Length: 366
Image (cartoon, one colour):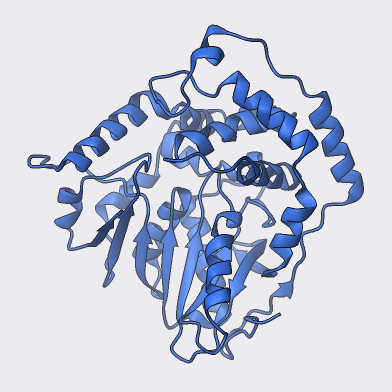
């Protein structure tokens, strides 16, 4: 498989990895799925519009149709084959006396001046969301002319990466430290760019503040401080409304993650349909166009087989727990040569461009 030549300066020795759910586990999953029932009809689940924060959440019809498709048409083995068509690796990284087994997908370039990119997903995402762009790059380029080294990790606790310690608290800053060690250990200590969305955006922001090797960040989500909002464009005014709707009506999930992670983690680990209902809502609500059902089921199935959900929601304690600790970073600033903020149509939180411009940031809007 090409695109597998690590830089000569790499100190880590990643091992090739293959996704492979056992036949026994797959059969057990199918049995659980078959036995999982859909809840009764209610006014709320019959009249809801999942795209609207002012509505009631996921519809019963969507969940019922998704369950039927999951049972009768969905093929996890096809998804496994797609995953395994890329260069997957695992590598051990130690942070504060704890050893993480980190999974990542990579395209390594043989071009001498290739730019290293770290692409970090969020919740309820995974490394799967980057496979399309990796496929585009490996189709368009050869290893000798690929302009980037592209590193796509499963964040600690997500997918095929091990979870945080069981005997101590873990934070976004520590997640960032693990990823920085990954990039430096792969030979990119002279400089890399960190890109992130959702949880990944917070990690990238930390890297922009704390890492000497991280030279630039590209953020899909920016939480900013209040400022003057006069003269906003129509698009920015719509962003203000999305912020208000999310803050008042759309963040109950995050408060549950932050205040009762033990409870929601155990509940959603009991049934694949319960898990799909919780995260399937977000795949619909946070997108302009709802992804194909197989794409949503890919994410839910990966979460199920890797037991990702209860292992992955620990960052929310910093954001919405009883003693939030993360947003102090907002006052520290990112002292890098570039801050790029990309805002797509229905990004659940949109910061005002007029406010970001005051920070000498590079901005693009689509």
